[in-house]
Length: 403
Image (tube, rainbow, N blue to C red; front, side, top):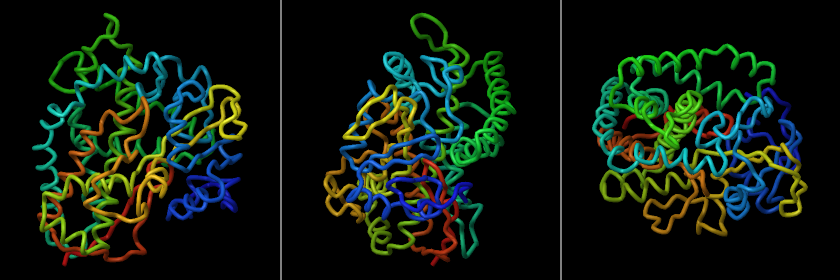
């Protein structure tokens, strides 16, 4: 529940933690697209939000007027001393050109199709382990009992951390992504506790003492311009994997299962025709894209008649862009066999998600194993479904009845 007063007019006072937004943002975006394609709010110190595909893309591709120095809107305003250039707090997503290109290129080998395919057997085994643990239940929470654990434990394995530390990651993710409307003092106090820094530093020290074949050792051995990565760079990239690689994918898995629980025809088609899965995955990503990214205005700038000021936040709702009827026919409908589907679920521009291969694999495997085990299921209680607040939208509880 938002700490802020209710929104009365999303065109002039939007809030991405408002209960109406959290429950169902699509009608809000539809109305704004018709009436006010670039919304504004004084909340969070001032923020803007384009809701058309064209507007979102224009900002995403513009690295001159918009900086990625901070990508999560909250009451804690970033200061120059908090996020030292050029690394940023979570490189490369918080890095600007030209450093961004080097930091991104460094990670590409670890997220290519071949290395990601190597994690598929573990992912499939994990999915079946979770399904086995829920066996015998008439009602399963597809979010709590299944979706949330899959990317969480895959990322923990990629980093070479103990699987039992998954719950620690879960707590950090909530702090970073969901509790964004807490006061600046509350967020600063929590961040200053230093628990995350202490934990990651300990894992880094372990890997320095005993290198192994995982992403942490990869980062520790990597070089930029002939130099080992700065410790802030290594730790920041770990934070990036937590922020960009866990909540996002469990939200996509959960939303896809939520959809299938309510659409028996789609459920039966996928169960009967596994070859449909690849286009279905892309359509679920389009229709239920989880990620809204953020930028900061670099300097005073007029954007489509909007007088943006230096330091203003700017939200990039990729889910709204994916529902733009000017770009996607039947934009509010899910077509599992949609062939032309240039969605922006993974972002646009230089910051397009470098983990897209991983996310696609996890989503595909999660759906394949669930449908193989439970081809027929439905929502047990539609009113009991809850959704996350903030910039990653996904179901947090999905009680489904096995038929």
